[in-house]
Amino acid sequence: GENVEQHPSTLSVQEGDSAVIKCTYSDSASNYFPWYKQELGKGPQLIIDIRSNVGEKKDQRIAVTLNKTAKHFSLHITETQPEDSAVYFCAASERTSYDKVIFGPGTSLSVIP
Amino acid sequence: EPEVTQTPSHQVTQMGQEVILRCVPISNHLYFYWYRQILGQKVEFLVSFYNNEISEKSEIFDDQFSVERPDGSNFTLKIRSTKLEDSAMYFCASSPSAGVETQYFGPGTRLLVL
Image (cartoon, rainbow over all chains, first blue to last red):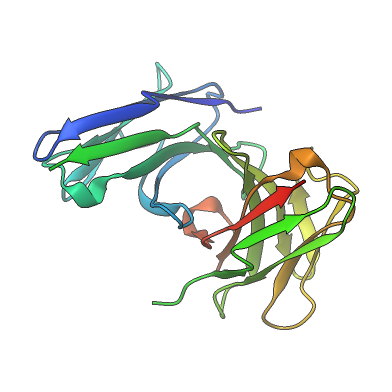
């Protein structure tokens, strides 16, 4: 089955700087890659996603890139703000399932004011 | 904005006891899911449920687990005889349609088995 790895596990940046989180996946047939933000005491919330027929997608300060050949995808947050501090999970759809998401281990992002 | 709610937020139980975790999905959603997250580890899929039956389950979801939609609003996860390794955060999610793109997660129930 699909396996998703994520780096770094923790990341501290100064407010205003950019943050980059990188993930790899194992199953070349996976075709949907969501990113979730989990704030303290809350469940994961979808913040952006990308499909395998697209190389890049941007939504305001957040962008995702996908390299299908290398099976890498990344989350980029520009002009970070303290409220961006949270745990971020990358994920990939399980190709044998329409409903199952395989999560990465998470990155704890701290934005220092 | 409508949201998924879960009760209780925290539960402590003795090993071997039965626990029921409750979820109220978003009202017009038709697909329901349970995930769990052991402390410091990945969020893991447990089960999906549609049209009053399990659509899919993972290898984690063994005979100790069951799900039910007892009425029109609640969706429950029952662990029949809890083990220490069942200690985790359990997330419910719901979706208006099939597919991972539209899953909305609840805040979770933290279960501690002693």
